[in-house]
Image (cartoon, rainbow, N blue to C red; front, side):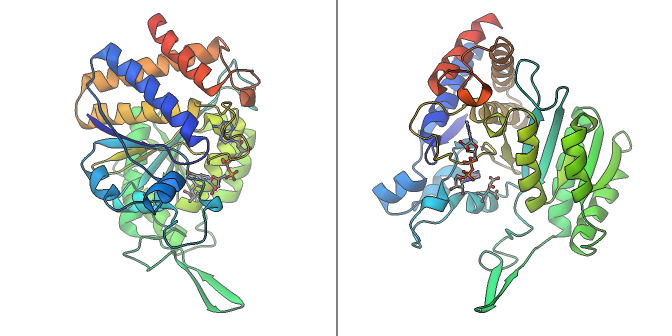
Length: 353
Ligand SMILES: NC(=O)c1ccc[n+]([C@@H]2O[C@H](COP(=O)([O-])OP(=O)(O)OC[C@H]3O[C@@H](n4cnc5c(N)ncnc54)[C@H](O)[C@@H]3O)[C@@H](O)[C@H]2O)c1
Ligand SMILES: CC(C)[C@H](C(=O)O)[C@@H](O)C(=O)O
């Protein structure tokens, strides 16, 4: 397997190395051969190579099976053309259309709710961040100094692809899928998304299918998150709801994610680069480590590689043991541990699995 390491910015330089360390330890125990490639991105790449997404990066990634991308702190980039926000572009270029974001409570952690085990599948490339092939540029226009128009693109193909990914995931879990939209108001855009979800529901009679209007869903998610299994939604709704859901189970440090496409997958935690805690060694590496775990699981299924699946399983077990034992927890989880300390505890726990 060829896996890329792209640290990103701020806490990315602390949490991505821990994810790699944990993945290396699991791979060594299960006999999975991984060829790692360090690929510069973000502020460090801008400073050393003149661009946040240096020439040749896309080609290098294309030759890999998958990669880890740490959080990008693009809000702090200088306002120059060489300092683009690279991750929407990577998601689009590699058609990473499904952003799969699990949300799970742990009895040992101070979660707002217990018994939560759901996955939000967020459409990753349309909505207000439209594909460059569909709408040029970012999808925002300012025809006069006092008017801005933001274009939201929904396509039948994009909707049905993400809906199918969500139905497949639901089939492998508790067989319940909820489509979240607002077709009551956005009759054409959300309407098309909902039409595609309903069309696919007929192909998956074994999956219980229902729908919720996004505002009502936001309320139900806070009050009774236990009622959901897999949730599929459009890009912007998914962006917001996944952060909200993370808040139910311990915060953004617990929010893992995988951006998956037809040929590649990118492990990318839901959270940002957390500049407020960067450089202190206290960022919670759970989300990044579990994103790497999702990548190994995806690679195991895509390449029918049992050692990758076994490595993913080993990490999942070891992480669960560390959390259950409240070992090495970082301050966001009420502990006094460090980023590296949690990585080491997870590696140690692999010997217990
Ligand atoms: N996927 C991404 O790369 C991504 C996502 C969101 C935001 N961003 C960028 O990140 C930067 C900061 O944005 P923000 O502050 O709004 O959001 P953020 O997610 O970086 O931080 C929000 C809060 O959560 C905390 N937090 C986040 N991750 C944590 C972790 N692993 N462990 C412990 N605490 C954690 C932070 O300390 C902060 O208090 C901005 O430049 C933003 O554009 C990037
Ligand atoms: C920073 C931003 C472009 C990004 C997104 O909208 O996808 C972030 O919110 C995320 O969830 O990864």
